[in-house]
Image (cartoon, rainbow, N blue to C red):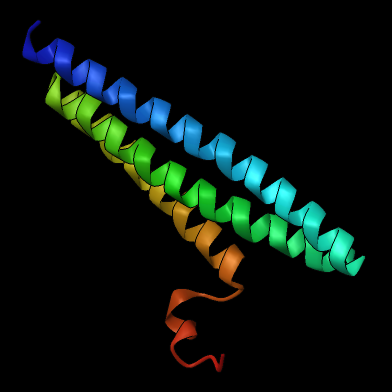
Length: 117
């Protein structure tokens, strides 16, 4: 087994981990939303619980997928084209993470420090 095979296997492992995180986050979020609904009968509160928990899982999943891309792309064939594609993927996923975090928290990161809790 050479380095490329190991790098591909590790990258695939990270992709599998991301899928598991997303699946578990979805199940936990749905169960939490159902529990919130049963306790309060407040659809808005249940929806917020679902969004926050699943959004957090999505953020973690995206971060793990970025790691998988780094390993799979740069470690195996660090050509200029692969690095450019990786840069684009990381840029898109970073924007997605920023958007998700802003949506979950309800404000931009630079506004959170001045926001009262």
